[in-house]
Image 1 (cartoon, rainbow, N blue to C red):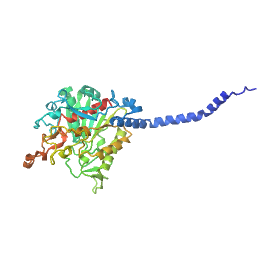
Image 2 (tube, one colour; image 1 turned 120 degrees about the vertical axis):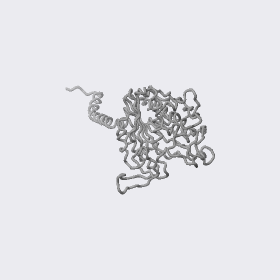
Image 3 (tube, rainbow, N blue to C red; image 1 turned 60 degrees about the vertical axis):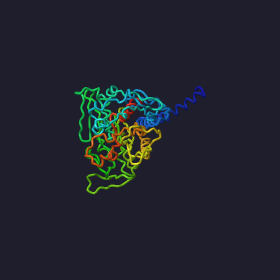
Length: 423
């Protein structure tokens, strides 16, 4: 006679009968985790980065900072490094002398071209709730050992690129460094470190009729849709990538988009709003990064719009004037110039928030807006002879777009340094 089955034994039998279902469920969860785990991590990391850059609390995600490549620490949780003020600093600024860096282009050498003051060189960015880590050139070069760093975009990104080279080159012996240009690509090589810091000219990121790195002053600008691989093939294999694009899109309320090829005899060109065109470029950039960059080994940055100061009425000045002869900062913490389209910032936020790839946003717009003093003004190489009318009126040819070096763009690289090592 079989022994009676106890109630506890009955429960065990029922559990045993359910085990195949539990096994199937667990197997399915494991399969999904393996198949989509990388996407989940990318999305999670992206949200972390956006929250951190906006100064928002990251709660459950706060321990994920170490997942970002090259990170050696983390920024104080409550600190937004892009929100703060400029403080005078004659002890540690500038980081280098203009005459000590032979790589600065003549468009940016303000002292050489007669600028009478140096006040613009002695300002340090101070975040409200923390301090930026000191720029450590040795750490940066050791991190770049055996690697490639590339800046991609327009002449403003080229200025940041040159600033980075100037911040690092003094640690490299003369016979161990070089700079060469190959069409759209400029390469600074640190032979001792087997490292390169590069700049690639692509003002729209996508293919355009302004892609010639030398001759590109074109008023009727056309951008080709879906063409990022035209330039992107030169970005493959880069370990740290820094994008920018904004100024060249500002031709009006609409942008011309080429649907076919520039080689087509009859070109299919449509006009769409500048915001939609810019959104198209941002999506293409992020799609390219997701397909070609490994988020576990590489980092991608995007630098926000660089402000110009072409209208003095924006900061309460006299009508018809601009940045020429400006030697002081704008003190209004809420200042926002008419040249910076908030609608473009909104597009960036919308596209980046949906990205499956972790991209670090360098929000330099507001802090740079205060610096009407830091532009090259008239103190730069003039590629064309000045007319008597221009000479009589310096405001007519003052450059209120580009920045003197050393100067503001060294701060952009301090922020890049902070976000690279202390995200």
